[in-house]
Length: 325
Image 1 (cartoon, rainbow, N blue to C red):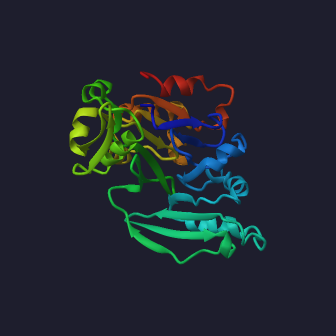
Image 2: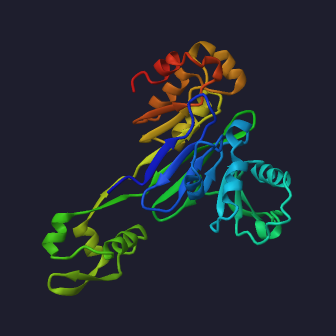
Image 3: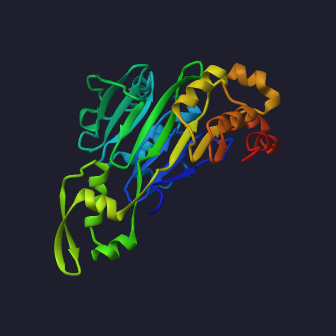
């Protein structure tokens, strides 16, 4: 079974942050941060269903207007997630334009604002000229901000002199089909295997499935088919972290939030020699990035978001951050 997540950093390490995560087998993609999106094709932009924003400094949110312009005719809702202030930020973006001629457009923008102990939700609809709906309030439980039958997304609030979020994308159990099991049962492959996987993810052990076999249709209990046909593996984890000041307390929070991510996307804004400047600017050094990666047992580290001051001489950042990887 192919991996669900197909991640790609869109811009160069010293340019605006933007991680594009295509979802295998689905007609949608996620993005983390929304810097300059000019390198994305319209086709890729139109696949974006959910935008996970760490914070709204201009280099992390500059691409909002381009995403909006390309997506005005989109029928599916676009969902935004971000820290305190994201609702007002998007409201301000939308107020910067006149939308008197778009009431027949289908686009809806649903915004989830992550607070310390709750989530605020607000809808902006083209039908209403992008006027904000009344704000709804939900509990925030176990750090989860989104979940479906294949994955869930978690967020952790950290500090960049303003609230900033880091994100964990975790695939649920990865389900493969045991070909030997198929042969032993004499069953024929088909769409029913997708239904079998769905039943497993829904923890439905009592349903019966009508399955094509070499001897005709037969009924099997789902729990029996789980045992005989499914190979179950842990899903992939992607962790995204940027724009924080290093401290042991912050490290403790991160270690409690995530362990053993398969891919760790992390900023390496300054070199180790500029640690004091990193502290003042609430960014990580390449050495601190390396330390965090090793502390959480990251299997692979991908660094990005370098200070432009090192342009043309990033060798030291790569050397310090990737030592041991």
